[in-house]
Image 1 (cartoon, helix red, strand yellow):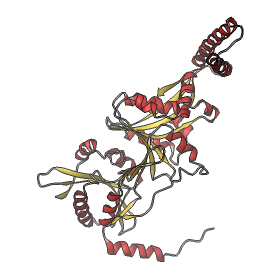
Image 2 (image 1 turned 90 degrees about the horizontal axis):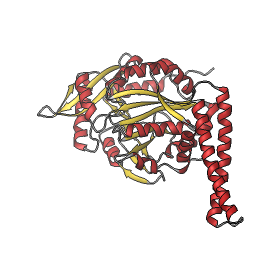
Image 3 (image 1 turned 180 degrees about the vertical axis):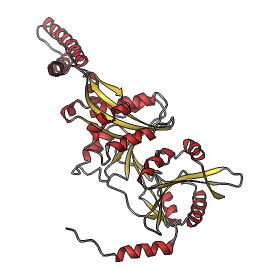
Image 4 (image 1 turned 180 degrees about the horizontal axis):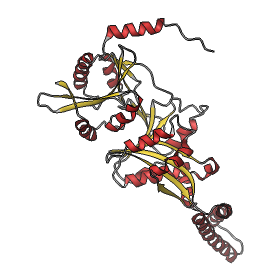
Length: 414
């Protein structure tokens, strides 16, 4: 086996069919990062029959005049469970990168280290893969941030009903209430980026231009960024609320007539129906009043929330979402996610990555615990990834570089 340089087309064709494909290991991602001073490199390893067995995108950056870093975003496109393949690939990669004057390589492999169900019980453990990488001189060096260890992922290969059944009660209720109000899904275009950014800007460290760039680059058949909005039309809201109230009012009147016919005598079944109907009637009356106020205030549809996704082959990755604080009680984010899961499940997408959660997600005192509860309410599993890994290519030069940085005097803070 030997390392070969791949063209963008060769790499893209391989990445599109690999089981470990992800939006970090794509030509598109290299173009995004290319604006940050990186040089891209596409490498693969072929066997004696010239069959491609693994590949990787590397982003090369000059740290100093003689120190070069290689970064493999989201790991390699390789079967990590195949130790022999990983060993040969690593040895050949080190040999090749030495010739390219690379000092060290950093990567954040996206194989599933451990998987927990929504009850937080361990259901899959691949610690042996990480142990094997450590044997091959990959050194764990921590995480990039507090949100770089766990994702909530829904995998479904049957139908949308089986997905919905796994949602918790609160999630189902919030979706139903949002739909009852007439909230609907609307696809945006690049012309709507500013409106999208206005809603999510407090949640992101990136600028508006970053999202423009992202949407322009992720614009292919297999890798595409899309933005969506949850909107509420005032007249539709009013009509829906009126229908719900009138329908429940008719039920309520029918129950009262039944009670009158029995001279006020009520069975336990009728009593429960009355209590439930009275409660719903009050709820729908309140909803109707809100709809009247809303329709008097607005003439056109109001944007309640927004969401950006990246379609990567058969996976939907939820990049970021947000909502208008004035309408947080309408639960537009729940409706948006469900609408998109349903939409793309029907189009053959099997994996829905709801994105990152805080590493201390189970701690109820953590300020991000609510974010975890919101995402886990969709019934996915908690996927834990490996720490970032360091592979030293030029050991003498790397040791000198580390020693020099330890000896450098620290700048005094003002």
